[in-house]
View 1 (cartoon, rainbow, N blue to C red):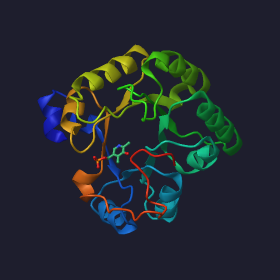
View 2 (view 1 turned 90 degrees about the vertical axis):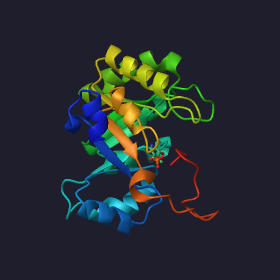
View 3 (view 1 turned 120 degrees about the horizontal axis):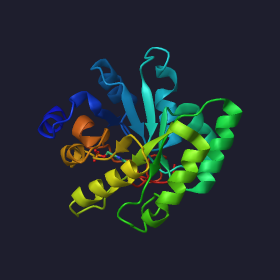
View 4 (view 1 turned 180 degrees about the horizontal axis):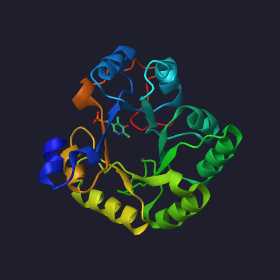
Length: 223
Ligand SMILES: *Cc1c(COP(=O)(O)O)cnc(C)c1O
């Protein structure tokens, strides 16, 4: 990350590392915490809660980002446990987050997820609907709507998708850009990422969840 930032003429500390610990055991999180990592990403609300709930007392700097699709009926739990929700992608979820935040007196930082490759199987607001949705979220949430997040299509050069997302964020005056994973984070940094979500390059391959277990979920599955 440091090399990529310097090569791009950017300050290395302007880019945050989100360590994606989904499917990893709690021990892996403890090891990363001991090494100084404080920001973690989880796909599922329930898994995140189980792993992180009791770590906060001993690790006040710990911050949890939710990076998987969120069912509307899990919005209350998401608002309760997340420091940032990176996957706000539809008006009904915005409604649910707004209601939960009002009830709890707590509003996490929020990113709008954009389906930047227009892939039918992927979460995220469609690019053609993104401007209106982002403006709606800015009206509802003010500066808590901090930026945009996207996962470019597999198997294509991610560069044009990264630059498209960066242009969209700039057009709305949004400072945060969550893009780049294990395979492409240096390129994402070159295109302006302020946050990269890295799992396997930190923790190694994810343990294969056994079929039928609570962890048997596709990437970015509904939480
Ligand atoms: C799993 C996941 C990552 C991390 O992927 P790696 O390739 O292991 O770095 C990043 N972002 C999202 C949304 C994910 O679901």
